[in-house]
Image (cartoon, rainbow, N blue to C red; front, top):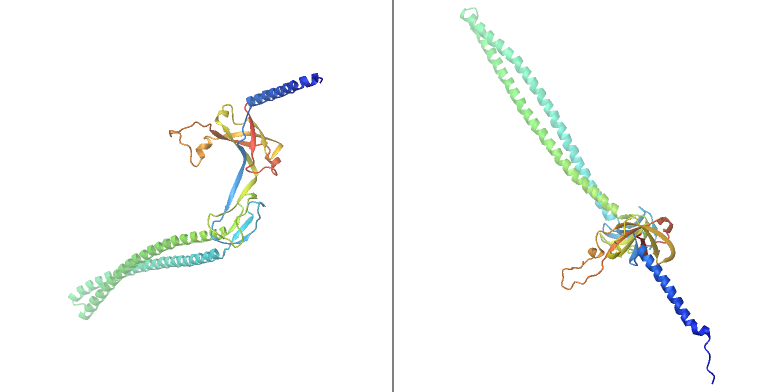
Amino acid sequence: MATEQTTPVKKYLPRLIILVVVIVAAIYGFNAYQHSQVYETTDNAQIEGNAAPVLARVAGYVQEANVEDYALVKKGQPLITIDPQEYDVALRQVEADYQQTLADLQTAQADLQNARANLRNVQQNFRVAQSNAAVQATRRDKAQKDLQRDQNLYQGQSLTKKQLEDSQSNADVQARQYDANVQQINLARSSEDVSQAAIARAQANILKVQAVLKVKQAAVDNAKLRLGYARITAPISGKIGKKNVVVGQYVQPGQTLFTIVNDSTFWVVANFKETQLEKMRIGQPVDLKIDAYPDLDVKGKVVSLSEATGAKFALLPPDNASGNFVKVTQRVPVKIEIQNPEKYKGLLRAGLSVEPAVKVQ
């Protein structure tokens, strides 16, 4: 049986294939090495965005739900209406209390005006009493002089006893009239003190009612707020996630109904190893490869580096003081700003995986 001869192709083909593989591997390895000298990369990164939870601020039954799952909403757009009847009744009640207190304030102000008017009358009476007393003092002095003159005439037998008695009587009357005028002055002075006290009491009552009125106004404002909370609007523009509320459902204050994600502002948070941060600086350009869109060319730049490792923000941070400590390479969050985000507004989603490559040289 003849031995099959080995052709040159069969003899050298395996060696040629191995040589090609080695060359390709060498080229790939060299390119990877060069790339690693210029770029720092990680696959521990994702897109982040602003998200605002929509919460119920008052309790009640859902009356309207004007939104669907993953719908686009605008800031201020009405979304959910909680039955407002209870809060409307509460508002009317506190408004009635406020109006009653306002009427009490008006009454107190009227009392103050009356007290001030009474004080003016008393002061006028006081001035009149002083004038009357001054006139009466003149009459009293004249009557006393007439009596002295008549007494001299009577001693000289130029005046009858009856005339003297009349002069004495007139002097006594004028003196008693003057004393009465003095009493009127004292009474007017006392009345003025009483009027001043009445004014002070009315002013104190006004301050008291005004303080109560402020409390009632605060109650009205609070009732209006609670009534307004029954109508829930979108806090930001964006797209909502899954809706967790339906008409007829009873909701509690603080209950999350759904979340709105702002669809116009996105950035990347990449968790680089601590050994990759030596040459990383703010402002360095970044090439972003999004797993969902591998052919999409997205550019970015480093805008900030966290002041602490990710482990420090964990619910239960590691305690290296324990005896079983094992050194683990830590990761530091790095925020990357996406350049021209409006170009990718319809594509980007919060939570998408990203592979950033930061050019450090």
